[in-house]
Amino acid sequence: MTSIDFFTYLIGKWKRNLEWREFGGIYQHLSTSNTFLQFEENTKYESTYISESSAASSNTQTPNNRYVRFSFGNSPQDMKFAYEMIFQPLSSSSSSTTTNLQPNHRLSQSQQAQQEIQHFQWKYLGNICKGEFYPLNQVAILKVIMPTSFITTTYRILDESTMAVVIVEVDEKQQPTIQYGNMYRLN
Image (cartoon, rainbow, N blue to C red):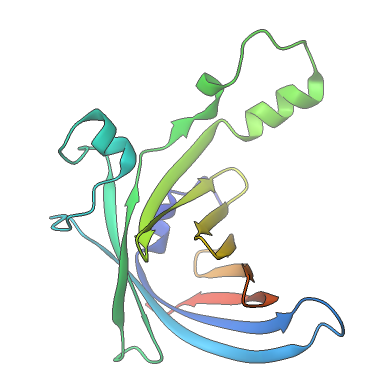
């Protein structure tokens, strides 16, 4: 599989199957979930939410950003809007690294492996959340940081219609959980 644009890859309807387990003790199985997800491109961008980076540069939307509406539900007919994600164009991480590094073969390979990163963000319960997609490894990492909880989601693209999913959720009110499984494209 060649390098992928995560925004384009996500567009469509998906089914996500996850096993939930509790960290600690006997690693207890909590439940299994089957959720339907939909990612729709929003070309008009009618939302009032503006990304931090867009707001910092101007009060209008950035022309190269792309927007996707994320919805989910218990069935394809039961989809509810959750939030809108803003995808920035692929960016090179080499511009953010220092140029006075000592020659190091491993570091050089590591820098090459992360030359392009696709950044995206969204707002969840009033908090700005951020994600990154690494095309070379075909891995997306989404981070939700809230005052009392932290959620990290990792998606690994397996093929044109399948992703592996791992979600780690830590909340001050409950035992930390791990959710793992797959997402399958429906259309």
